[in-house]
Amino acid sequence: MSVPVAPGRLPFLGHSLPMLRKRFAFTGNLRDQGDLVEVHLGPMRAYFVASPALTHQVLVTDAPKFHKGRMYDKFRPFVGNGLAVSSGAFHLRQRRMVQPAFHRDRIAGYANTMLRATLDLLDGWRPGDIRQLEADMQGLAVTIVGEALFSAEIGRKAIDESRRSVFVIIRNGILRALSPGFVEKLPIPANREFDEAIARMRAIVTEVIESRRDDDTDHGDLLSTLLRAKDSDTGEPMTGEQVFDEVITLLTAGIETTALALAWIFHEIAANPEVERRVVAEVDEVLAGRAVTIDDVPRLTYLGQVAQEVLRKYPLWLVMRRTAEEVVLGGAVLPAGTEVILSPHTMHHDPENFPDPERFDPDRWTPERAKRLPKGAFVPFGGGIHQCIGNHFALTEIAVVVATVCARYRLVPDRPVRTKFTNAAYPNDLMMKVVPR
Ligand code: HEM
Image 1 (cartoon, rainbow, N blue to C red):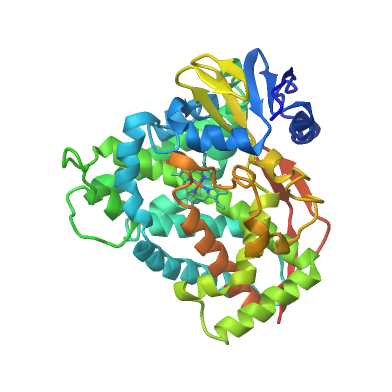
Image 2: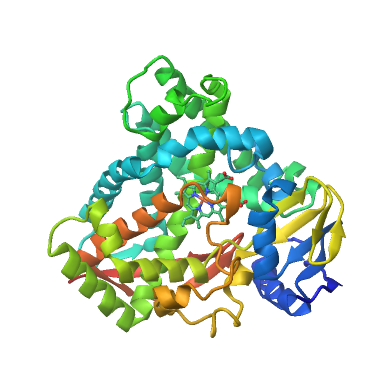
């Protein structure tokens, strides 16, 4: 493995769109400078990891030597010490308590919610409508995670508030995370919107938790699992604050990511007629006209490959870590407290592992080809102890939504899609025409 620690500079994070677009290209160029590249985020020094082997080392083999980094600190005022920002022993304890909420049996229940929410959305579509698909997918993703979290009636207000606030929080939060500290104190509309959205979400989620606190019934939702979970060492349940932090974390982590994958999947299906033909043929064969169930998901194998390819092509741009102790990485000695940047986007666009990386090709994911990939090359859900807890939830959601839509409609692009960038590439104005099949 080559070990140059090359100096690089991430352009100052001023957020103009051309600048952000350049940064995506820039991290791709960093890959050519070595496996580990020293970069500057404004005044801050960090190390950019540019090889699958080092990505795997940070995420998996040396995971206990790292904590979550600077990007996550910025979310702390909102998500407290929820799974996405916590580290070490506390994270492990919480992870064990939250994990049962994502057990296979639970996901089977959420699959019914996913189907119902998709059918509700389709009930509002008329043949010939031009839909703004990213907005539809965001609304759907909020409804699905919201209903999986709070099935009971009291949850409705929280779901409505999430629809209004979650995207404001995520986008402004990511921009803050990538900006110098003074930016978040500026009296600009983005900061005001962020603070107001957080205050509203805190109020409504607290209300829901309070209303359920003394209710020991298992409502089959995520919140029931969190409220009933007991620490395996102490036998203690989570405090109200811990439940709150995990609820907000799931809302934040589980909505935008899945909405994005769903929007891009419809874009790519429409842009690739052969992919569309194969998806539709498989859906028709497996479902034979009935509604999709959880048992169909593993049978929709080609659709599974299409989902993998979307997650490859449109992943998160950055994931960050901070060394908790001295770490030797790619031959460099990083003292405790060093910020380390991983990039699923850079890994997934490496032509060595993904030839012609901009091409959408679900056949990269046949089992024979997929198993030839080196560890660390494909990390849409991260890896190791912090691997996305919602990965099966998300893959089930993608399968249920896409199969249900494709069984009924074709979505035809109404105009070329534009792209905008924060911590991922987002479709902007993905206008698609609804055509009955
Ligand atoms: C396509 C959809 C999704 C993608 C691409 C995605 C991606 C990721 C990635 C890359 C991480 C690791 C971050 C890191 O290592 O710092 C992560 C963690 C996490 N995700 Fe997801 N995610 C998705 C859907 C979901 C869903 C549906 C949920 C919950 C309902 C969820 C909840 C979480 C949580 C709680 C964590 C933190 C896990 C931990 O550190 O223990 N995600 N996700």
